Length: 392
Image (cartoon, rainbow, N blue to C red):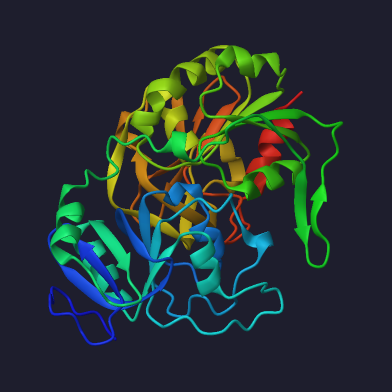
């Protein structure tokens, strides 16, 4: 069953539907959880790692269109979670989900979607939907699944049209941890799982704005002891933990909205010359704290094949080197607003948008992309080593 753009007539056998904010109705076969969910429709170009994508809290209130057609064919397992089941509310795929063909699978992906409340829609022409997003921007939508094929289209259209979207929306309170956690999991090895960390290491306090667990594993691998704290942990509470450095995590929503309570603490950390490393949302809020502005992107960057180039004076002979990176963001720092004391360190080779900054005279830097990958290339692990190397 292929994409039937703008068709309101329900095809025979359609048990799922995607209704865009402009009234476009896209039919398909539903799978996973029953019900409906509202969110922004985006696309991800990664060929692997769909489970990690679906459990990345940065995808909260988003519906992921996978451009790779064979999603679900390696099943699902507990080791590939990037959070406690949080993340995208739904997914759109080309092919129906087939039985798994991986020795690591613990259950089928369809069953996993049911368990974790993910609504799926298959049989859609995902290339056409991706082209629509590229040309017209990421639309708001409602995704719905009913095994009996019963839908109230009028209500779905109304919900999609009235949803306000991600701009101005602080989603972090819904995805951050509720309490402090001493992180222990380290590097993963086949047959051994995640190793344990050594407590006698530099201490990093990681602020969880909706973090992927693999970030903490990479900090451990780079040589740090990690304590994770909720997003609204105060500056004084963080300092009471005696950190050698502070990590600002990825997360969902509008950085300007989250920054209302997060940025004042980050400013105090910069003033105190505490080593800082920010990723994605954390990077954006570090930029705001330094005086820059952020903006909503037209379609965002999401995938595991994004080229980023090193720029600026700090790189020496490696200036101009290109890293292939994993990305997931719909907001970005406006490079034109960077103040004189902030240097741009990385740029996207797709569109020239800012992908990295460092604050002059301070041990503070951030990158827009995800150097922990999972899924994706591992070109950028050096950033974790750079950060840990700054610690006393």
